[in-house]
Image (cartoon, rainbow, N blue to C red; front, top):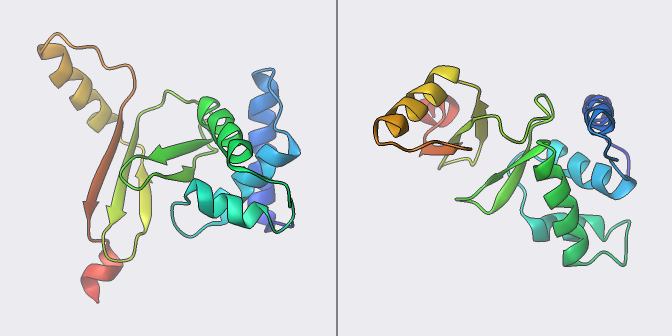
Length: 150
C-alpha cells in the first residue's frame, strides 16, 4: 500500500520518534498510521480494519486495536471520543500534550489547535478547585469557515 510523499515523510518522522523512545513502528503500525494520516476525516477502528483487509487478509479487530493503542501511547494519534475515531498527530510525538479540536458538524472537518493559553486556562481553573489536570483533550463542535460561507 503506497502513501503520498507527504504522508511518507510524516511516517518517517514517526519512525524516528519511536526509535528515540526505544520503540518500533512496525509495518502494521506504520500502515495504520498512514491510513489515518491520509484520511480526510477522523477514522474509526472498523473503517481502518476494512481498509487493512485490502492488503492484510487476516487482519482482525485486535490487530487494529493493538496498533491504535501503540500509536496513542506514543503520541502519534489522538482519539476523538465524541466520534470514536482517530486523527494523526505526528508533529509532537508526545502523548501528554494538550490537544484541542474544532469539529465541523456540517462537513466533519477536524482541526487541531495547539493553543497553550487555552491549556493553561483549563489548568488554572482546575487548580482553583484543587484539581490537577493530567491530560486534557478538548473537542468543540460548530461550523467551519467554509461551511459557514456556503
